[in-house]
Length: 128
Image (cartoon, rainbow, N blue to C red; front, top):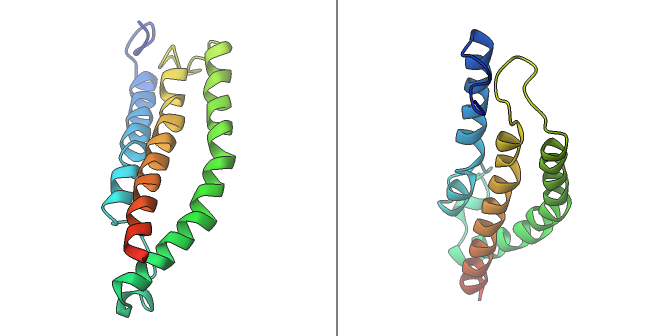
């Protein structure tokens, strides 16, 4: 059985708990970004005009977010590919195909990058 291993045990349930936490924590991050509900220090930002805020967000995304994804996405893909090629499984009798969970990382990051690209287009329109 690929998800539960050879039998359901306390260890496999603990593994499942962590795997579900990864899914819940990584996949919706792009939606949080698009909704503009992420943590930010607003003490100076909050009193500014929307056009100024759009410019600050645009510069921040271009300077910090885009280079981050240029560096992290290839590594996340390699992380998943290594698990796939080595047929990695849980050491605790949990998930037999650990690449399934490890694939959530590049998928979640790709969805976040897509959200940031959509946000960049939005910000370019607002900043003009």
